[in-house]
Image 1: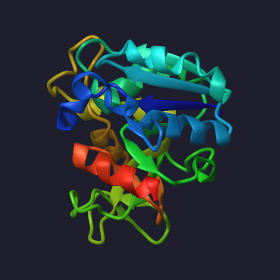
Image 2 (image 1 turned 180 degrees about the vertical axis):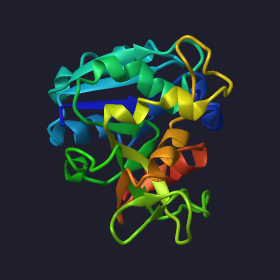
Image 3 (image 1 turned 60 degrees about the vertical axis):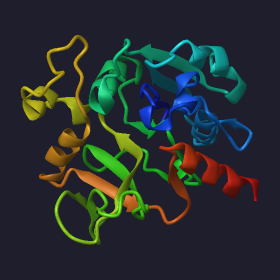
Length: 234
């Protein structure tokens, strides 16, 4: 895969006051901005082009990361305006910059030791999701991964979606029909979540996945940020 998308447009409301002056993906962890961990992994996995969608304090991203050349990458910034477009709208907005082949998409506010190079170059269906054990703050999980590595919306033994996946462009092909008249779809550009599209694809067995058993953290609060910093310092 040559292209990747990093979701970095969130307002970071649960991270206040830290995100009052710094976007969450640019908060320092382990001696470097959180998003830099992703950039390093993407470069190591052979990615060449990274699109970073931005909104809150957007100007800080190019000021901090530049054009990506220090990691051997080319970075393109996709500004979403003052109101973030959610994951689905953000992906749709960035799609023109993501080539024509499957691409990696990563939430900018997570940390993991997962090897991005181990992700499939192309999903067998529309998407491939990296799943992790349910963290304390999300004990019910999101989806079910069966013995054949197919992801389902219903069932027991649920796992949590890590925020890391590989997608075909066609995952967004019928977004309007799936999303319907939800708030935000009439905005320009439209604003909607990706999860309903994934659930629709799961109904036809078009979402695969694998279970990452290593480290993963949703860096969603100052407390979890501090815990991760302590862990990495050890």
